Amino acid sequence: MSFEEAFSYLLSLGHETLTIKLGLTSTETLLNALGNPHKQFPAVQIAGTNGKGSTAVILDSICRAAEVRTGLFTSPHLISITERIRIDGKQVSEPDFARFTAQVKETAAELLRQGGLETLPTFFEHITAIALLAFSEAKVELAILETGLGGRLDSTTAVGAESIAITPIAMDHEEYLGHSLVEIAAEKAAIIRPGVAAIIAPQPDRALNVIVRQCEASGVKPRMIESGLVEVVETSPDGGCCVNFQTGEGRYEGVWIGLRGRHQVTNALIAIGLAETLGEHGFVIPREAIIRGIETATHPGRLEIWEGQPRTIFDGAHNPGAACALRAYLDEFIKQPVTMIFGAMRDKALPEMGAALFPKAGVLILTALDNPRAATIEMLTAAVPESFDQSNVYQASSVNEALQIAKKITPPGGLVCVTGSLYLIGAAQEVLKQRSQRVAHQRA
Image 1 (cartoon, rainbow, N blue to C red):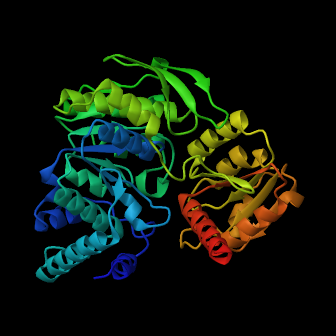
Image 2: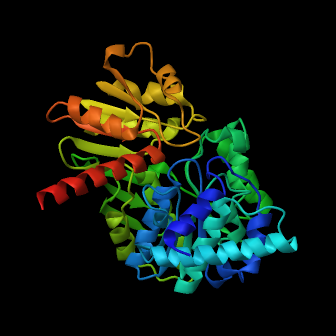
Image 3: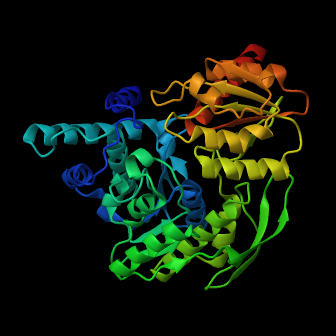
């Protein structure tokens, strides 16, 4: 099986955002038939609404700085599906990805023939199994797993991670997780089981009460992350933060977080809590490695800046909480005119996201995405506040067209902000990379 065939097979299972099937049975059955690769290494599972991906990459960076061989599983990807599976900081190769996909495909098909499964596992269940096979073969010492959706019934929960973290919880994915903060918190808190080490980020009271009750029912004494344990002592012009962290284990002073934005302070503190917990469970993670890991962490598509004409910032602000974090960043650090390209999924709280983000834009470009779950131009237009100058609203039928409009109308010294969905970020970066390659080829 080639990489292209592997990717086509996964896509044939249905788009991951539309074929979600919550439940652990299929994943557990599939992993058992594959020889239970997840039992070859300990794991950390990170759930929450916002910040779980950033927390995962910071922890991965810390562990690699401590010379711990890691496997990192995140979602979604921006350009290549291989981005989701990293071993010791490097993406799994396309030939290896294809090989693991073939193994999972054959195993799933055989289970279906024998009646071990009623239906084929979903896209996300497949990719989870592929990642765990890759980690097992690579003999990772620790797997770091970003939960895909929720927690209680997410396929990553089948791994039975020994350490877990819950990042800040907010309203999102209501059609799957529930229509109240209490219901959503219950789904995410369910990853807390007897015997786990649990790191809990600051939460709204309603969510925190649910988490505390789950901890008590499981006999788990959580480590609560308190926002008062950090002090931002300096910021850089592009939004970097120099922070003093205080934990129960010690103090980390003058740490420059590699990821931009004040909201990353909490994610870094959660990662420190996880690293310290791992240190209590046999991993050797020196203080110096924690600092170096925080300072060198990268996360594409999250306040990622590309220099050029015009300068462009990418941020997957995919729900109201993330939109508010981006707006806070833009208010504090961006003084030049902003041309905003926005596209999102139809099931998101578009009016709330628009109310937070659009007033910061001098010009707004709304674009449809090549995704069956994407919001239409009409839906996006309806999310524009009435007070916004309609003469500064443009519509683009594609991401490529949106980028062309932005390049044409953004004034010298202006900034293009691409936001609203990580799928938009990936599509935009792919277009810009292809455009750059064509220019380089023409000059050669």
